[in-house]
Image (cartoon, rainbow over all chains, first blue to last red; front, side):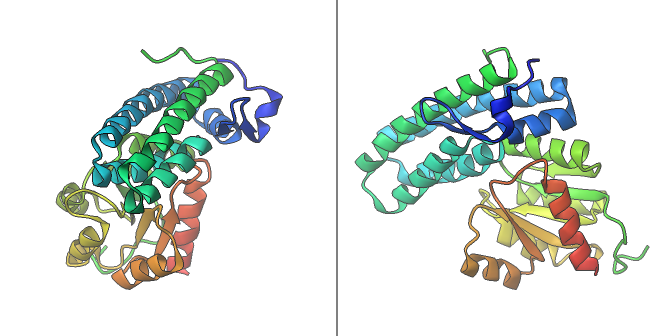
Length: 133
Length: 134
C-alpha cells in the first residue's frame, strides 16, 4: 500500500474542492496496519456509493423524512472517516429536509454525489487502494 | 463482584449503533487502537438482550436509531439492576447545549459528538471513564 504524500499531513483540499482529512485516515492506517485499513476502506467506500445513490433516489421521490435520516447517518459516518465535504453536505441536506421544499435538496444531492466520487477517487489514489467493485 | 459494585478498570465496552459502517470503524478503533474488549449491537433491542451476559464496564449508545432509540434504550437499561453504576455515554451528531442537557437529564454521563476521530476515540472514552470514577 502506498505511503500518503507529505501533503497529506493535514486536512487536504483536492483540486475539485473536496475536503479530506488524510491525516486522520493515515493515522488510523498506521495504528491498525495496511491489511485492516484496506478491509475497512473497501467496506466504507463501497457502502458510501450505495448510500449516496439511495439518498438520490429518496430525493427524486421527495421522501424527505427518510432522506433526512440517511443524511444524518452519513454525516456522522463520513465525517468519522475524514470525508469532510461529504459530511458537511450531508449535514446541509438533513437541515434542508426539515424546512426546504423537495426541489431544494436536489442540487445538494448532486453536489453530494460529486463530492463522494471525488473523495473516493482521492482516497484510492492517496493510499494506493484497489478500487472497490 | 456484586452488581452494585462498579468495576475500577475500563476494559469491556458495549457499543450500540444501527450504522454498520460506522460500527466497523468504531470497533476497530476501540479494539485495535484502544485495546478494549468490545461488543457491538445494531439496535437498542439487541443491546437489551445482550447486555447482562456481556457485563460491560461502560456503554456507548447512539441516539438516533430506528425502533427503540437511544433515550428509550437508556431508560430500559436503567431498569436492569445488574447495570447499576455502569456509565452510559451517548454518541450523536446533535450536540447543542440544550440537547446535551437533555441527554444528561436522561442519565447519560457524557456525550461524544459525531463525527469523531477514531484515533482519538479511545482516549476520549478513557477520559470520560476517569471523570466518572474520579
